[in-house]
Image 1 (cartoon, helix red, strand yellow):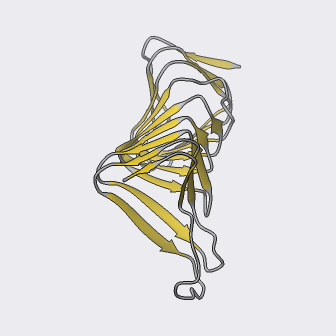
Image 2 (cartoon, helix red, strand yellow):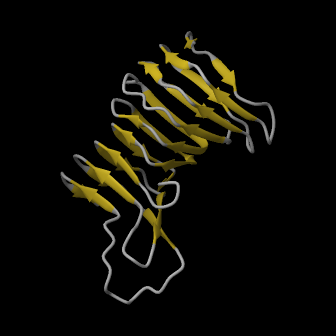
Length: 193
């Protein structure tokens, strides 16, 4: 089936901590709309998101995006909580609010980062066209002793504005001093700091 979201709708996904909601329908977004997942609850978008309307993820809970959404060209606003994007949304812009974390292995268009980015479900990659950060945005980088790390891959340009915190999360292992390079941000265009 298809869930058509129109007219600026707000949809509550779970009512309390511990609730888990799995959307098994294609979600069509034609107007700016909001999905609210409360703290401690989890919601999963298990099918494609399509349309041009902005999608606001609010409430502070955990949201999982698991289906590729090549036909969604709105802006996904992760305003609060944790958003695990394990999908391709190559036409969608993503804005990560100061109270939000973007994780997973996702593909998106342009990213505006005010909160935290943590690619992967362990070590992984987020791929985007352009990246811009606001001051106090942060990047949690998981590293291991054999040279693997989280990575942000930017097809065009990356602009890191103001203070950009990079936090190293070391997996167990022996790390030889000065012998491993970790490509944590890779850009095909320019990197402005």
